[in-house]
Image 1 (cartoon, rainbow, N blue to C red):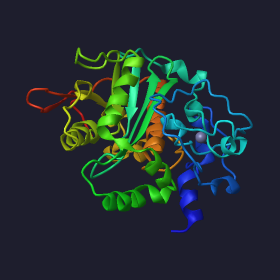
Image 2: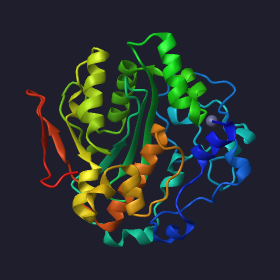
Image 3: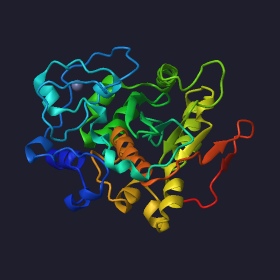
Image 4: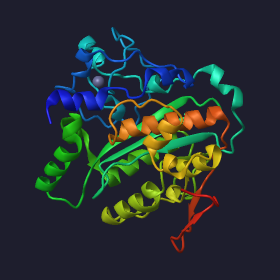
Length: 326
Ligand SMILES: [Zn+2]
C-alpha cells in the first residue's frame, strides 16, 4: 500500500456531508488533501512518568481549526513539542475537539444512574497493544479526561513484537510512537489506577467496583475476554473494577430498535445514526473517540445508559442484564 493511500485512509473523516446536519456535535473543518498527507509523528520524545493527559485547557498556539490527527505522544502525557508551531499545526493536542456537543442536542436527554462513562476500546488480538479510556460526564455529555497508553506484550519475542506492530500500526504511520512509548500491561494498570483515584472513581485497598462510573464498550469482548486473558498472561489478579460494564451495542439495540445487522459493530451504529467517522478504524484512540460520539448521540436522543453485564467474582461467569441482546 502506498504512503499516500495509508494516510488518506487514516485521516479522512468519512460520511456524507449531507448527513452532518443531523449530528448533535460541532464539527471541525474537513481536511485539505495536503494536510491528509502528513503522517510523521515526533522526531524525538521524552518518556516522562506523567500519568494523565488532561487537556481540556490546552491552548494550541498557531493551530488552525481544520481537523487533524491526535498527537499520540500528547495523548499519553509525553509530548515535548508543545512550543513548536509546526508540530501544533500538524497534530491535534485538544482531545475534546471532536467531542464537542451542541447545546441544542440536550432536549431529549434523560437522567442517568451514573455520573461518568469510561469509554474503552482495546486493541490487540494476541496481547493487548493499546489501552484508551475516555471519560465523559453523563449529565453534560462533555469530555472530562483521557487515559491512553500503548501496551508492550510481555510474552512475545522482540522479533515477533516488531512484526506484530508493523502489521498493526505501520499502516497508520504510528509504529514509531508505539515503540517509543509502549509499557508493560502491569505498569499501564498501575498508572490507570492512579488516574481512577485522581478522579475519585475508585479507592485502592477497598476493592470493589467503580464509584459513580462504568466502562462503556462496543461489545463484551474487551472486558469479558481480553482483559482477563491479559491479566493471566501478565500474571496479575483481575482488578475488581473490571467486573461490570455497559455493552453499548445492547443499549443501542434496545433503544433504537434497528435491524440486528445495524447494531453489530461501531461502524454499523455510526451508519445507522449518521454519525461521521474520524481518524483510522482499529487505531484504539480513534475508535474510542468514535464510540464516544455514538454514546453522546444516544444520550442526546434520550437513551438511559445502564450496566448490561456483570461478572461473578467467584465463578467468573458473566451475567447479562438485558433480555434482548446483540
Ligand atoms: Zn505533540
